[in-house]
Length: 359
Ligand code: UGA
Picture 1 (tube, protein in one colour):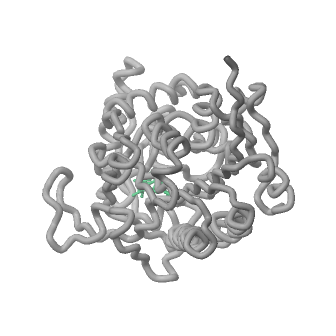
Picture 2 (tube, protein in one colour):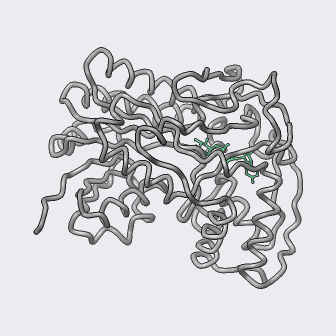
């Protein structure tokens, strides 16, 4: 029996996370997807799918988005600039794309009774102050804002001249608009806070299919593929909890399919068990790369200051660990991929996609 697919509108469907969500929705056959993005390279393999309708556009044309919204009851917003290298170098674009251009869409969802699933960020928790105790050790008593819970943790930012926080601030204010629309005008919403999702199709490899500084995994992959040094910003002392994109997408599908459990909620989607320092990450990735290619990597691991690497106005969070008890309880969701496994899969994809370019 052919069950009719329910259409969803995805804004920003062509990015890393969007490409995985569209793929998952089309393969499960419960939904058709109307997608909007400026770029379609990461979804080129899906464009011929009859259940996918792609529109090349940005979010600055609310009237054309309104037309598409009329055909769905659910709007998923994944459009964002989410690369730390531009937070302090293109702050106004970061504010517009993550806040200004999205507000009319949030309002339209509230006015027309659409459900909104909005992708925010773990960066809303802001400037954590964990100190530098080793991974796996107890949290320091004076540390704050480290194990991050959706409904109790404070959201703390650095000073205005530290423009890294433009992104966090824009994303946080948008969350507050969405929440207020929920309270004031009964907007049905869910906010997702991704914690360092990794997998295939992340960002780009500089000099091959993009220019600039991508996030840490593609940065290290560029170095490994070309036999160049891996660069540790401020010694790689900061920590991140990484989650595999398939685990992440599984949580998002549960959110979409369980509106009774997820409407009105904010969810951390991350994996506390996959925490590592960036320095350890560099060593682990170099080992895995050598194993997968069968050739010892000659890439050195070097240090650089954050100011040299990112320029003036950069700042960082030293440690952020997601509390995922809410997603576990309401969605029965747990990430299952270990750090080693997710790095193996991701590095193997980069090697297959870009080739080992060492001479
Ligand atoms: C970014 C975004 O700001 C978040 O919105 C997003 O949720 C998150 O990525 C993500 O990937 O999900 P951040 O964790 O700072 O946040 O992103 P990365 O650029 O991947 O940096 C992670 C750490 O590695 C930082 O401490 C950075 O300074 C360091 N790094 C980065 C290096 O040491 N070397 C590099 O070559 C690149």
